[in-house]
Image (cartoon, rainbow, N blue to C red):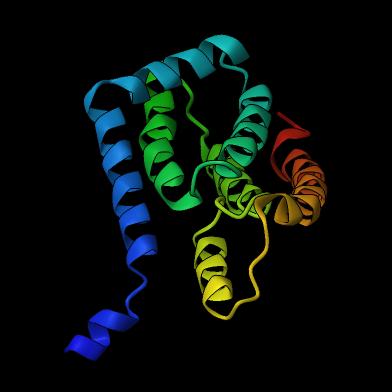
Length: 160
C-alpha cells in the first residue's frame, strides 16, 4: 500500500480537487445563471453569434482553466440557453466541445493531459517552462480555432 501511495501524483490530484470545488462554488452562488444571461445579452440571442462566442470564449478560457472543470461549469450554462428561447442548441454543444478541448492545447495548465505530462517531465528531469509550452501551444490552438470556426459555420450556421 505504501508503494502505491508514493507513486500517486498528489500535486495533480489536489489541483483537480481544487478546480472541481471552484466550479461547485460558482454554481452555488448563481454565477452560472449570470453567465448565461450575459452571453445571451451580448450575442442578442443570435445562434451564429452565440456559437462563435462559445467556441472562441471557451477556447480562450480553457487555455487558462483546466478544460474538464470548465466544461462541467459550462454545461448548465448551455442548458440555461433553452430557458431564454434558444431551441437549437446542438451547435452550442459542438462549439463548447471544440473550444474547450482545443483551447486546452494553448497552455500547460489548459488540459489535464498537459498537467500530468508536466509532472512526469519534472520527475524525468526534462521539465519545460510555461512560456516554452505557450510558444508552441498557442499557434496550434489558434489554427484549431479557425478550422473549427469554418467547420461550425459550414455545418450548422450557413443556412441559419
